[in-house]
Length: 89
View (cartoon, rainbow, N blue to C red):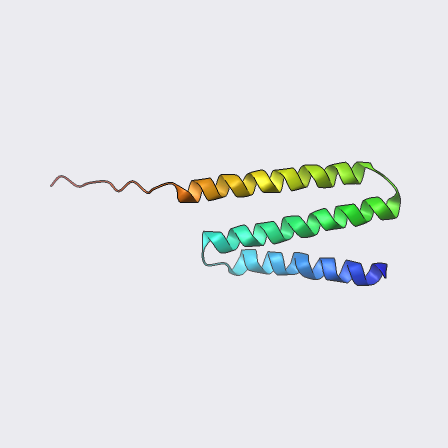
């Protein structure tokens, strides 16, 4: 059971890395970062359950909060209008 879960999590992390490496747009890179963060959070939660150390859950929670903040910040950055310089020639 655990080995199947680990394989699925590794596939998710690998697909996130692949998406980061082959992304053509910033939105695709953002999706890759989110996939990688989600897989990392899941790995930390499984590690906390397996090792019976609650600190890993705290680390997973902090990573989840950071991933959400990074996503919001990047979306706000992308939604800003681009100021075009006017050439007064």
